[in-house]
Length: 600
Image (cartoon, rainbow, N blue to C red; front, side):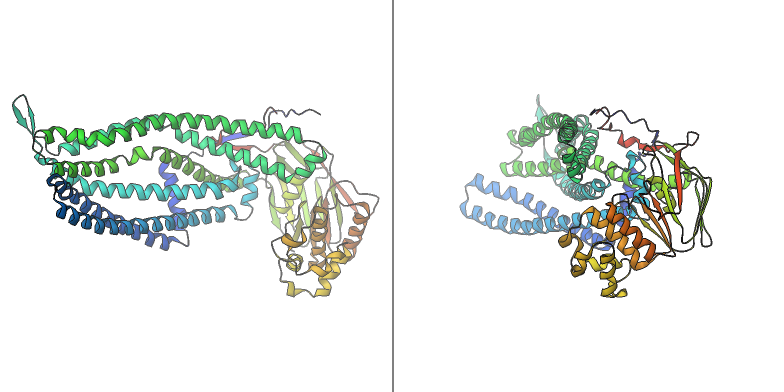
């Protein structure tokens, strides 16, 4: 068997989802505004602003303490030295409390920001049929789990950390620029017999010093934005591949496909390692700038103030006070330098989250714009007229151009092995609107049973009764349908949790989905290959069950040809339509990562 997978030739439309930066920020603002925690976030923000202001005032007091402390050392005054240590303990104690409080508020803001952003994304994702449309739209809807879980968490953490750090740096700058200006106001330089002074000399020196470092850091670190975005995308691809193998491990083992899957996983890993090496080199280059700048900063303020000190116009305590003020100003100015890698990471993560949210809204727009199948409801029958369905691989249609189905009909919809049948099931359910023709649905509620049935978390009784309460049915009725479909062994487990205790296999889950039909007795039942995987004995028993329990209902099964039975009174056939239009998948510009499976 060949292991090579040819390139995907399905039609793809590239869409421009790269929103302007401020549009992305507005997306976050809307998400947080809609959060139930927005009041809490506001109060936390007010609290951390107050703490930062108090901390800045305490740091000003600490900077003023430098001069008398170092002057006592210069005078060798022990009693004054001890007194200054007491003053230091008081200031440092208050600053310690403020630091702990700031950390606590910082973590609370991160939690609440994540809650707001993730809640918004989940709400948008879980709007009716949107997640399904997104999953079938192409690469625009890949890895929604990572966008909602990991990217939202990371964006909330970075947003809180960078915002608080930027605000704190701004307050420090405003607080210490005046202090540094006043300290350097008396700096007098003597050159070749001339004396002159530069107003705010150390302030200008601090701005020039930090400006050069910021420009150099941005020049070297800018590639990290794209590298981080690509890294997250490839990591998501590797995680998805691992999850896919784990979900299908039985089929992989039965077909001896471990070697093939290993090669695919190794290729995904190689892709991740390749971009990781690019990140490594970019961070290494940036470290040359940031670390070199940090080491120079150790002596830079002393060198800048040295001419005045050695000229005798500044005491040792005054020098240390000027150095302390310079360091505070420089620390606030070098915020950008210290956080360039985090800023690049934040920018890349913001782009991914904003692109994902935009993609969800885009699928709705596309759904309405490209929708060509007309849906309506009237009377007590289903009418399918000239239906053709657009799929990525082409177009399919019913051989019969006009079909009418009434309650009591038993209809089998089948097709050759080379034709997709699932889009027909999805079209009748209203999930797949792309194509042509008209579908008129009955006024009665319809029950759709997909190939893999969905069961909400809960006990076996709750699962059987869903969406109604278990109290709506007697215990005898619940146990009776289990026996009739061949699940009699479960009759004593109605109160057991479906996921934690019962752990039913796929065959048993399909039988359970059919058992629910016997309880609720819908007038219209649409099955998607639910019967095809049943063993012959079970197959005949289920058809007898449906015939008896749903005697007056219409049953439409999308699946393979009937097996030696006369349950179905009509067979409809799907065929390829060469003249029909295929469905174009969407590929956003922000997700231009090559398909890791192309060429395999």
